[in-house]
Length: 316
Image (cartoon, rainbow, N blue to C red; front, top):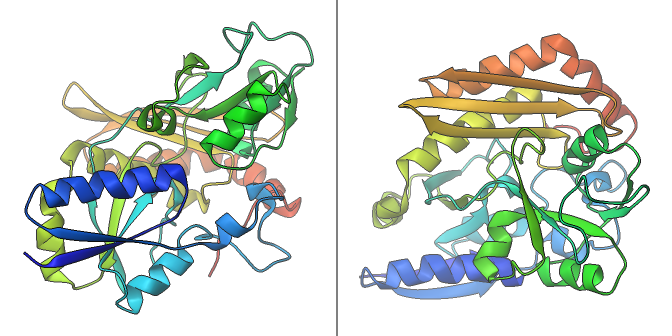
């Protein structure tokens, strides 16, 4: 079996993900090496992610560009990504070889003293740098004060424990993978907090046409996760959004059909558009839901978000 070289970001969660895939490959008889690669998104830690881009010329792929450069140069054979970090349109020369079995895609409410969003006092301080989370929080609790929160999972939880925030919202998947669920008080349903497209899923990216590596990775692909995330990413692509835009999408297989819940929201929570539908074709289901949201006012919301410089517009 050939040695497979994995490219990964250096955060605790990214390395957990890379080591998880590495263990599965080693169980198949492969030698595996992991190369840590620092991305643009890792270097910019003092600016909310939603604001990274317009002036600095950065946009989609701020957590993937340097890894893809290493992949193109042949320094690594595959990259392990959180799927929600991958642009919906991959650059030429790359492809997704597998989407692994999905961890819980929902968001988690974390707090030291409060049991739920509704239990928070008036004007409570909640940490998140996600416009998607901010918008949906404001929709149910317009009195809350939302403050930026960057850093890895440990950093965010430490800031919560030190009293800088009354609560923070984090992806349930990352907390479960790292075994850091002590402060999780509420798992938020998609009806309250629709998650980001692809949240909880890992994507394995390779050079397009690298048939040998693709064949080695085929066993990692989970059909249900692949169908669900294909649907969510089709919606995101039609809406023209990246992972930092106030768009939520969660597809699940229910009664042998694909069910999609999706959201487009104004960052201040004043307007939240929701769509719920079933279908058989993942791409068509996501595309149809996006078209419905756009026609019901989503286009105006997203134009205003980009116009105010709150998020990174689609890149050419």
